[in-house]
Image 1: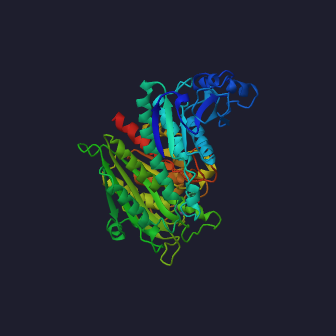
Image 2: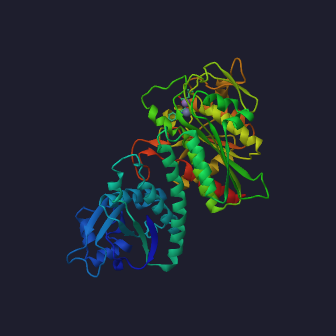
Image 3: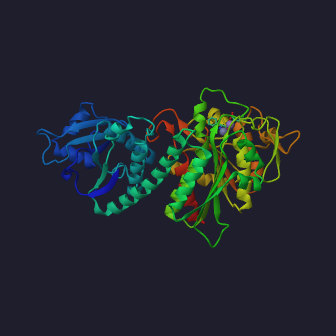
Length: 509
Ligand code: BES
Ligand code: MN
Ligand code: ZN
């Protein structure tokens, strides 16, 4: 979709559709909507009076401008979108409304539309951020994954080709353009994550994920990518990760992408580590078949860190960033790891396998050790780690755990800027005892209680003193409904949060 700014007045645009807005309970429209009201001899006011337009959030009223009411008015249609209460209006509402609106326009089979910048008028919001939120909402809200549908071609004719952001104040145009530019980078990264996660697991194998990362880095001068084969991983003694992979016929791969934004100080770095299980059957501790298809999303963390570092590099922040993903399937083949096995991690610590379905933490243990051996100074790990996080937090928040107050605070703020919520959970000493093994250094399950906390404690055991945040995204990587800019299926979380976070942190240091 082509997205551009147009400097000019609303009535002079030859467009099939022009979008204006209204806050809830506003009786006399002002600004752009007021202008339309004037040009139409009070039509909008009349519809408000009749109760047809209320300004309720996501309300959409389509008005055709043919006939005599509209004088000297070029757009063929007007769509008045409700923004909800002015007091509740922020960038998330802009994203939500823009996404709902974009799907409506698509369903009307309209290929080009113009819009004012929502929120920047009486809403009092920043022009650039408002514009950014509008474009993010539009692009993310129009997402679909239909490449495996044979009929997809016909549908494609209905895609919107062009979005015009119309602004009469010339001083605001540059700000608006900055917003558009940023939004595209953030949205594209998120969409790329969604695409990887939505791919079926017979396609998105560890090898495929590694190939994706390598191609991404090859096409980006600011990134370097190292791919580790099974023999490399063996040489590095990643016993926990290899243990998980041994039940599969598809080889495991290690993916390490670097962005060097501060070559003078290699210790000024952040490591983004993503869980990369391309399919989690549970292994010998086999999962029930109901819902097992969603376990293709068990590489969501890996997909997020790969796409985040790509987007980060475009902004060229002055900081070094590493993205790491150890990719494998968790399968119950004849060579599969047993329950009761003891494996030795890259760090030398031993783990007793109590449940082969608690595989994520095993792969993360070796990933974290690899990061530490490579001088990691800050670690963020992202993992669809526990079903327990779905029980405690549901689908609205990612769970976060940390050994560093400042780091988690910055991450939560970054998430809130992008409409991705993170909720802090504790790492209490009592729960950590649940991971004690009778025969090895640690065991990979901690019993039924505090399942997400014991999983986080397990990772912490390997992280040690390095400032670290663990994000459990098991409840948020996939959604089974469409709502605003989130489309049923993979959500692409927390790709945008990670980008925002690194940009924020790089400005502070
Ligand atoms: N990948 C799953 C967690 C998961 C659950 C992701 C729901 C997405 C949605 C993880 O590997 C897993 O199986 N965890 C187990 C751990 C248990 C065996 C200690 C779980 O949560 O049941
Ligand atoms: Mn599992
Ligand atoms: Zn898993």
